[in-house]
Image: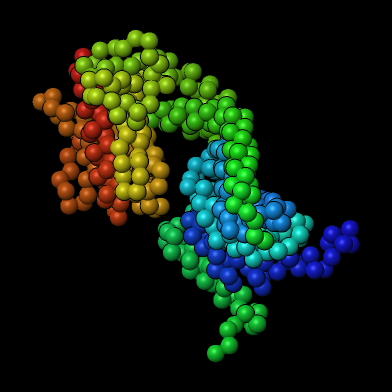
Length: 212
Length: 240
């Protein structure tokens, strides 16, 4: 056990959450982060889908890494990613149809999410399957928690609900004259919120600030 | 590591065959579930157009609830041709209006769903389909027995702008359609105009457009006009 969860392996899991966060530090996968964060439930399902795809594509590519011919390695990576994404998409359509309707094309677009190709090229091609698997989960989670935080703020202020539960209505906030902020539902607010997260992160972690 | 061309060919062939088999298998196993979901979604849209089925998301089993409501209210359905005559041996529910549009206009089949309301009045439900700003929009228009007054509508869309065009699938937008008329006093087919503030409003034939969602609003107006005009012969034959 100590080997499986050695501190080095644990770092693979925790680094992408903060210091090497795919969205706020590497600025990858922004497109879907803006599009699916209006409500928490779709954002959560999207995050889960990305975690599954990053983890298993990392695992499979890492397991195959010694057999993959260098000249077609990008194609092989894409085939693996595409197959996994189609599986996830089919699965969502069969079991959480309403959410899959809200996510619409964005599940399919996980295929082109830069986080995936980035991790496969940078990590899975050169590391053992178990480490790659953890690295995939870590990066998926790093992507996921940003999505969920952004979706929480947008849903609360834009629709007055949290996970579909009318929090503001129950608290009686509307009777004081408060009105839902329609701007929160529009995509630019996601960008601004991601910006705010990056700002907070950098003011807390000085090492992330580029030297002049 | 550099490999020979033969290795690369064999490697990619094997990989592709493996992946294809896996995906085909998954698709076959999951298909019944997916089709049931599509069927439930369609039934729910039809029910919404006659103001039914709003408890679907809070129902214990959504599928059972929707199937039950559908069986209670949507008792009849029929398919008509371009001249308004009933076509036998076609199930209205399985007719895909989008596919029908590819056919020659005289060959198309037009589905009609009939809702028996609690007060024993009938509503006739007609599918409509067209395009908005970013993609397809569709829905159902329910008419009262006079085949003129709108009893209710339901619209949905694939990817209209959130907060703007996307509002066509909300009840506040759809409810004002009820009570509007699609024929003028002289019996002319005028459909419903989705009118902006500076455009003429006719109390019988217009609803308010969505500010900032002009192209979706106009798309919807055209959608209703183009789809409903195909039913004019049927409507004229069955007017009460």
